[in-house]
Length: 630
Image 1 (cartoon, rainbow, N blue to C red):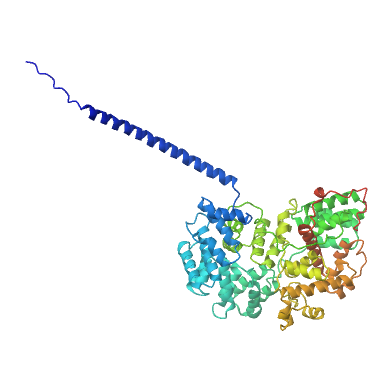
Image 2: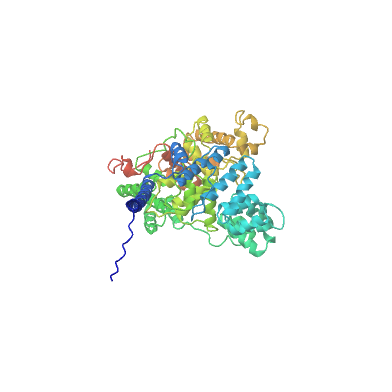
């Protein structure tokens, strides 16, 4: 008996077709999803590559970008980081707090990324804008948010300063966590100005972390002069050391007798060379100059020695060697006193070209010359100068800049926050303390010859028939553009006038009606009044000396009676030697510096004064063997 194998049940034809259709659809769906994934991945790769390519080709958004580009980016850019950067630049350039708040609205998002501190910066700007509007509660809310979200950023130091008061817990935290930050120094300065048990603590904090703080030197010196013998020994030593850093040895001596005596600087071998030049001992001077010429460490020494070496060579009849040395000076330092003298000796120029106009303000330059990717550079490029300065001071700590590039950066930042007194000193050091082989740098020279009070000085120069560049040079040397400057001998204001001299210069038009009821000293601290009187006095000196600028400049510093006693022998033929013979070291330095600044302002803001190889028209040896100045 056989058993038949049961047949498999068969699906109905309709069900079979449906099953096949489902399988095909599933396969198609899988293929579609795979294709979609591949397309998405390719799109993402292309998008990233496109963004990177655009980022490389797109110019960075900064204070030099056009307003149209910034506004367009701020509103329509698909990149949120680009929109925020554009808005920050626009906020930094805003004319008032309302406009600033408009651009900053909704931009405090995100977290801190390395050295970039955009959210904390936005919160600080919002708080400061609300303060300018007089809305204290809104400002405090932004400061508190900043302190809560970003307690370790330099911007949070400002939050602690504004939310607290000198001596309280917030300010104590500020002093400990951010000791060199300008907000900490401002708190310490307030404490040191307030009589009480913490006064000395404030002064010591300033001495350790910021003796160059505006107002700091005066306060520390005052404490030493009044309390020097009563101060604890350790405190007196700290104060004395700080005062030596700001070149105030008299006050340092009051705190710590004998501290300023040791280590006095000397100008050897230049002092001996100068004496040989004044004695016309040309052969001995040549030997001394040749000996001193190696090694030449800094630019200031090199150009001085090279110029006088050329001068001596000329006196000895070696005209070709003299012109070679002067060309070298003019090449290395074309905007300097010795660069100008060298070009005079080469027969290229006589006096600086008159400056026909004064720019309303100095152009903003990149910060220093080294390309750096840090928060200070980013803040500067964004136009947030004050915050850039605060970050720089926090990170520098108590270390004063020494190398030329650091001096350049700090000097430029100080100018931006209206501290030209120390800023110009640092920029001068940055210019002259660099290697001789490097020479002067155009960008640095433009920065260290800024223009402040442009309209006031230009108007005063025009009224009294002066070259505006000369008046700028006088203001730079006299007060470093500080209208409130008071000298130890009692000179006041932008152009440093003695009250007795100013009283003689006063006319019915010298003082505007709104200043008429003020005393003379208060009037002289007004930049407009001071500039008018100083220009009148300088014009008077030029008339008295028959338009001889060297004598007028010397008289502005030493007084016309002193200059009259020096004699005029050799002034026309050898003016550089006449200047070296000025018996007052201060006036000698003053005349050289004013002449240098006058020349530089004329070259940098008026007729360009290029280095000899670019300038052309070099006087050839056979055409001008004597090289006499015109």
